[in-house]
Length: 209
Image 1: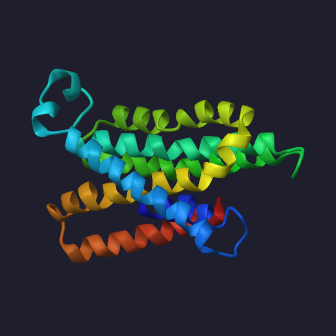
Image 2: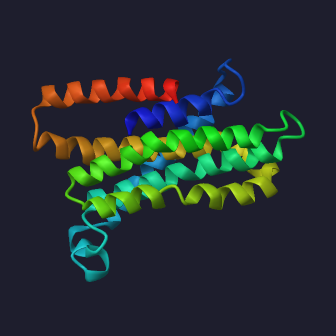
């Protein structure tokens, strides 16, 4: 999940306007990261133990499961916007730009689906719930693509902020929920090695796919 936030959100957000980095390009991404972290912090505070004991919340699982689903759903929004803006920009850049972006995002949804299912399964969710959670977190992509295509003039300038927002929420979730939970079951050394191996594997998957 950390690798996905870096490879699929932060780096594309920084390089969305060529590789030359300036303060004007970095600030929107950093602002989005901080806003995403603040959003998840607020959501975590809202999901108090007393609230989670209510029947309406119990069926959704524990705090970790709800936050993972929420974060990955948010993460899908800028990807859908990218597809919509790509289709709207075909007359300027390439005739098949939107299709290329949609195909690329569809392929990398595979490791991202695993990034949803594996933590949920580790938290005790059933295989059926993991499957539907991984599927439903991608639903915001087509929902965001349509308005982005119709109003690309609005969405294109805020793409970097949206990417930073999703990345900030994901990283905050990792530090707040996933790592502390992992430390309860494994040694810090094993967690560190699994983190490094997973980070490198995600890079290889990004290159291969």
